[in-house]
Structures are given as structure tokens and as C-alpha cells.
Image (cartoon, rainbow, N blue to C red; front, side, top):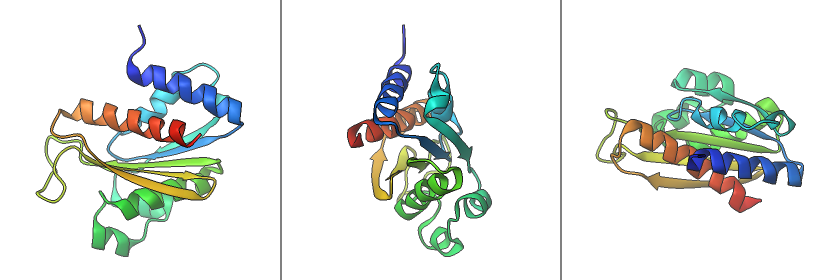
Amino acid sequence: MLNPLSTLSQELGDALRANKQTLAVAESCTGGLLAKAITDIPGNSAYFMGGVVTYSNASKIKLLGVDVETLERWGAVSEPVALRMAEGVRGLIDADIGVGITGVAGPEGGSVEKPVGTVYIAWDIQGALSVRLFQFGDIGRSAVREAAAESAIEGILEAL
């Protein structure tokens, strides 16, 4: 039986094919889980252009064009960084849709301002930007990562 992420990935593939759209992803806290879920679906090469895991600030700067000042002011887990990740990967990989995910999966790394389970997901759909803050809570590292990947796909499906 398919898990929710697999089911959503299949729906995403169908929607991207139907809309003749391509996708690129930039992941931090999910560590490639979103790309894996997408590439688990046969025929994904018709719409999935690729992705990057930019776990360090240095990789966010070098690969996605995140400003040092933005990172210093807002931190890696922030709305402006997620937005720039989505924009950066869409441009880097030349896709119709870019997704950026950054967050605190835990168990360490949380703070009062950004507790474990805090995730920002941004979408750049042909230049139209949107971002959402998710507070998944301290539900465990794997569960936070899976919830983030599912939410990223749901955001694309809503937009399409």
C-alpha cells in the first residue's frame, strides 16, 4: 500500500504532466526526501528537472544565491531564505516551478523563536512567489521531514 508521500508524489506527477510543467527542488532539512519521493514515481523525467540539497549556509549562498546579509539577519530557517531557495533553484535548473524547504527537523537545533518542527516552504511558480510557515511540533526528525515534503507537494498541487 502506498504511503501518503507516495500518493501525493503520484498526484503531483499527473498534475505536472497535465499542465506541461517542470519542477526543481532545493532542500535543506528534508535532505533530499522530496526529490526521492518524486523520483520514486516512474516517468518522472518528463517533469522533474532535478534538485539540490543545500544543508550548509555556504551551499545556499554558492548554489542558490542566498545573500550573506539575509542569512545573518534572518537565519537559515526563515521566510526570506526559503523564498530565495525556491527562486534560486528554479533559475539554476531552469524549471517552471521551484520549491525551497528550510527548517529545524530536530532533535537539536531548535530555539524559543524557532522550535523543533519549524519549517518554511516556498514556491516559485513561473515567477509567482509564495511562502508558508509550518509548525509541525517536536514529532520526531523523520516525521518532520516527511510532513515537510508532503506539504511542499500539497502547495504545488493547490497552485496547479
